[in-house]
Amino acid sequence: MVSRRDVYLSVARFGFPRAMLATIAPFYPVWNIYRERLEDIAKRYPELFPYYNPKDVIYIDPPGIPYTDIVKVDAFGCVWRSKVVGYIGEVVKHPLDDWSKFRDFKLPDPEAGVPTESGEVNYLTRQGIAKAIVPWNEIFESMEKARERGDIVSAWLPHGFLFLRLIYLRGWTNLFIDMYRKRNELYQLIDTLTNYYLEIVKIYKRNINKIDIFTFGDDLGGTDRSLIRPTHLKEFIYPAYRKIFQEAKSSGALVYLHTDGCTVELWDQLIDSGVDVLNIQDRPNGLENILKLKGRIAINLDIDRQLLAYGKPSEVKEYVSKVMNLFKDPRGGFMIYCEIHPPANLESIEELAKTIIENISLQ
Image (cartoon, rainbow, N blue to C red):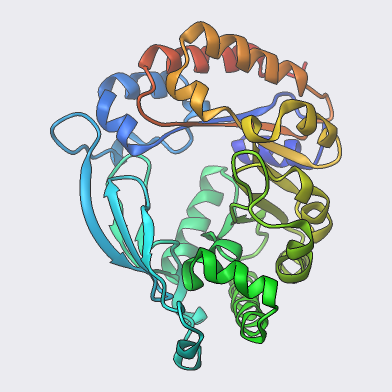
């Protein structure tokens, strides 16, 4: 039997796979709304729901969107507030909102483990756990279990590891003023973060043999344009990306980068920095632009979240069929990722799974 790991690596490395790779990932509120009915779909299409484990599903009563109001602090000292279970929320207090605080600022200890983005470990099928840093022993154990299951052996770094982390630390307005004014402290902060993440990558490499892929996430785009100018990316972010990604690739592993929003004008730099698998969104970037990447880099395409949340089953079927056939390539290099958010209806999720299975073969 061909494992998901074998398929993934064949697709990512353009190894002429037998099929594309697809993932359906309902967020926790969707699971909490539909419960056993959604589980029934996941059980019938296990190859499409890799994050579903019936032993790891915990619901919050009553059924529906689980609202909350929690404040949490991440390992960098950023204060977050979340109002829906399953979503990280937003930073409400930036620890470096004034550069006078930089002198006493300390990064987490890389030997302690890998920091989470928001001070919480998030799950798709149950409530998150407050944890600013995931200890190395837990991470290494999880990676070895994945290897035993035939899953991809992935070394993760937190979503928002660099560009977004700068925003979390300084605040949106402050950061872009810093870039415009070329503040020396900003260069120092970026160098400090870069060295910190380089050390995390090295710890992974020292302790785990044959890592398949390093995964990174940093949202660089808005709805119709990038959040950062290409010239600013080149000056402030690209050098750090390249150093970190090249260190990861030196072990033979692939580099995966998730980046939401419209990032078309940044793609050349991202590819040049060492990204092997690029997870981008179809809606803000446009299929006509994404098609130009076909064969140049492996794409994990984030399918239109608005369509998946609000679309009728017939609309989902038509669009997903179109996308899968547009990007069908016997060499591989194409995956789809379907993130499901409220108020998605169950019929559309069922139709999504059926449509993927109907179109997934490359033979």
